[in-house]
Amino acid sequence: SASSDEKDLVIIGGGVAGYVAAIKAGQEGLNVACIEKRGVLGGTCLNVGCIPSKSLLNNSHLYHQILHDTKNRGIEVGDVKLNLANLMKAKESSVSGLTKGIEFLFKKNGVEYIKGEGSFVNEHEIKVALNDGGETSVKGKNILIATGSEATPFPGLEIDEKRVITSTGALSLEKIPESMLVIGGGIIGLEMASVWSRLGTKVTVVEFLGQIGGPGMDTEVSKTIQKLLKKQGLEFKLNTKVLSGDASGEKVQLNVDSVKGGKEETLDAETVLVAIGRRPYTAGLGLENIGLETDERGRVIIDSEYRTKHPHIRSVGDVTFGPMLAHKAEEEAVAAIEHIKKGHGHVNYAAIPSVMYTHPEVAWVGQSEQDLKNQNIPYRVGTFPFSANSRAKTNLDTDGLVKMLADPETDRLLGVHIVGPNAGEMIAEGTLALEYGASSEDIARTCHAHPTLAEAFKEAAMATHGKAIHF
Ligand code: FAD
Ligand code: NAI
Image 1: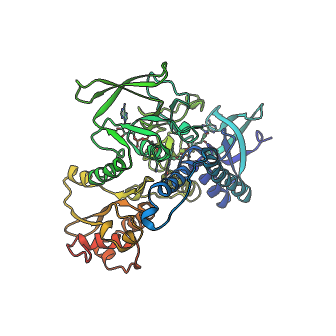
Image 2: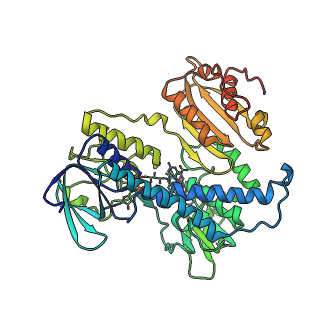
Image 3: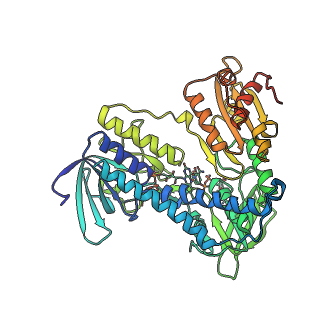
């Protein structure tokens, strides 16, 4: 049994943070075990996050496009029918293909996969309540806490994942609701609102702030995407707070008011999606048994080398500080293993891209205009609209723009903000430029293939010097 030997590393959680750390540790020759209680590897991202949401976004977009955007392309289609069960099956097959792939990679890299819930007995020993019944225990010279996050509940509204749902329910509804209210106009709210609205649901998004998109989205970009989503049929109530909810009647009711007050009203819908953020998940982990405290938001407290106050216990991913993104978790996982194995490792938190997979997509990296204003950092702006890009015109997909922010003295790139087709792929170039400390002129003088959407990226860089060619 596992109880006798001590591993070089025990990882609690098999999400992106945990499974990447496990594979990397295996590659580095560490004797490693990964404990996961879900019954499948891949965590939130693969099972109920990034992957299933992108499957539904992609296929609902295709459906919506076939319904509304083919005639003008010279394509005439007959009866178009949606088969929701098969849409969900396509999603499930993408998910299971990927989660099985991780199991294979575990085997390939000699990672021991323990299926069960891990809990600290002491600073080196973890007991595991096995999914198949019974218990085992495993000891680690090093331990990595990678237990991820969960949806933040809305007080007073009980989640049943059918009528009152989180993203998890929104990814597997069995019928298309006639109406949906979304609490929170952040990334989850807008991606899920897009899916169901395309399939025919009347969606209203209630957002506390004066803009949509959640933290970090540039205001100009946020306004642009809001207009486009509105054209697609989404309704928005901004500067509005949800006071309470009631799911006892035939419809779910929300009592809302303007943030300033005095505009109280009751909204109702068949389904309510709670999308007000996620919170770190440490329930049942037994942190109290090793004297580890979390901060006021429930995050495991770590230093710049991912160490808790017990230096051999580290933590990465959603359960600790920073943006709750899969690629951020992955970078941290690799860096943490490098710290353990080599004594050094690094993540550049200034160059982590964000993508919202609506249509068009929104993507950004680095600082927004408001960020720079708030810090009194001078900047130069260059924007280029996709309506002036030849490929976007060819594709009849011209909504959106690329916006680049650069230092007026040194011309160093400070931020890139894109709303437009394929923005999520295009942001990789901005991230690389930022990582390499490129100037906007470096980008402007780099040859980009024609006709591509990426030319809009180059021309936005040219525009920071007032020298775009096509606009
Ligand atoms: P998780 O993925 O949450 O994994 C933690 C794992 O630990 C879980 O599987 C859990 O079962 C397990 N666990 C917890 N406690 C224990 C225990 N005591 N014992 C054993 N196992 C335990 N990010 C992106 O970058 N791009 C996207 O497009 C994107 N889309 C998303 C869409 C949705 C709907 C949601 C909800 C999230 C999305 N995210 C996206 C965020 C992304 O899913 C997370 O940032 C990522 O999953 C974090 O990885 P993690 O390993 O830290 O945590
Ligand atoms: P979020 O933090 O992005 O957005 C939550 C929104 O809800 C905010 O705009 C907030 O102002 C609003 N809000 C909070 N309380 C409210 C209330 N009472 N009434 C009205 N509005 C309220 O969180 P979200 O969308 O739940 O996503 C959680 C995490 O998952 C994010 O950190 C995100 O990074 C990650 N994620 C990433 C995706 C991607 O990369 N494409 C996709 C989905 C999720």
